[in-house]
Image: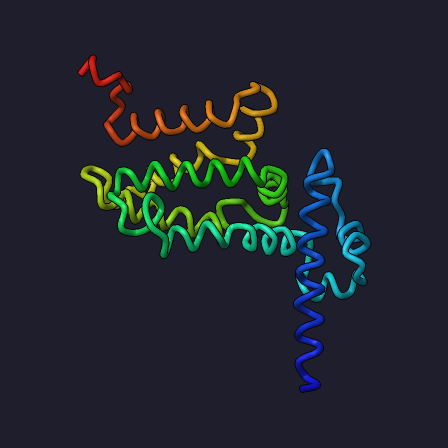
Length: 202
């Protein structure tokens, strides 16, 4: 049918733009170096098409981030252990934070670009609200954490993209070191600040 062609073209253009933006943010030294004109040229579309589809640079970054995050979202909402909803709360808190950390490590350029958008605070973005609500909902199932809005914010602060970038680029921590440190930190919070000790010391 004739009306389907524009929709198919729009979908192809959208994917081309998202792929082009992903490449550019990964290749440039800082997110600020990527402009809408750069993305349009890389994707082979007109600037009008780009702005019509994403409104502005911040909108493009949010759309790209959400597209890359979709697989993780599905694992959290409908997947099996350890991310899925049937997981025991304590185990799931650890798994959720580990998933966020790994996502930011794998998409560091994109996460930094999102947090660097000057149009709004990263705390007001859709993805942050979703992570916060999800984590708070799991914390609510643990003794002593019911209704702990602050605890969810505090734990998410440990996986901010700028912190992850600082620890990997400046302090040269490896992926596994970061994951281990985050797990240990989270366990201390969940256990009321008790230091993590080997089983033989308990």
